[in-house]
Length: 311
Image 1 (tube, rainbow, N blue to C red):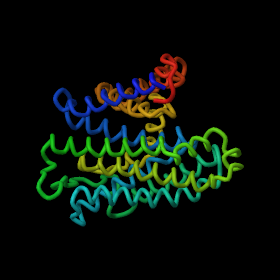
Image 2 (image 1 turned 135 degrees about the vertical axis):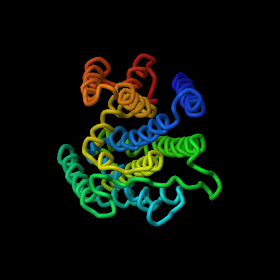
Image 3 (image 1 turned 90 degrees about the horizontal axis):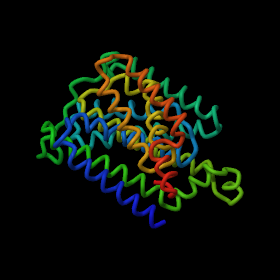
């Protein structure tokens, strides 16, 4: 336990140091993209890594929230924080609807239901007039935080995104280490036993699904302000695949794993952008190598080497 605490402390310090110092050495927009996808991956990991539910449709919450937040900011004139909260609330409501339908099934049937419902959301994003169709929502204003902080300034926008990421990450960390989180892990390990102990398993799974969807929506809403547009790519099934890849690369069921996995995938996409669509081949090869050589993911293998509990 002492070694686990030391390792967690080191990782927390590394994460905090990176978040604070990154704008001095890296392009702020790139780091903001990293943080948005890291939050998205952590939200997804809450569902698959700590509850044992594999969703193929999380892009619906990420992309749907981006569209709603973008519309609220552009058309309704909401301030940035309220716009992000609007997108997050939409993702939570959508997560409740999807989760209430999906948790009636298990395994591959659960995954297929989430994928089918996500494709319906993608269809709406393509067809509804306010989404802009294939052009997406463009020119989303960043506005002023609290009425006086101009988010068009790169550093101001960066630290706003960093604060959202840290708040979301701390919230997930608290969920995992709460009695509620322990029940979720019991459901993941042995659902029939958790049911026999008197827990309403379906209710716990639904709450976990809604929380994961809301946090995914928080990441999507933040991303739409960072890049000032929301596109069909955000709601496409490929986005659901990418977040699965991030989680598996970093370490399924670990706390810091999804952050590392998101950094790996986004960094590869940026560094290898010059080779066009071949970047997907490189990412695919990286994933295969990880599955064959590091089956627990980056953080999972570190846990194994140090012989400590989940980090």
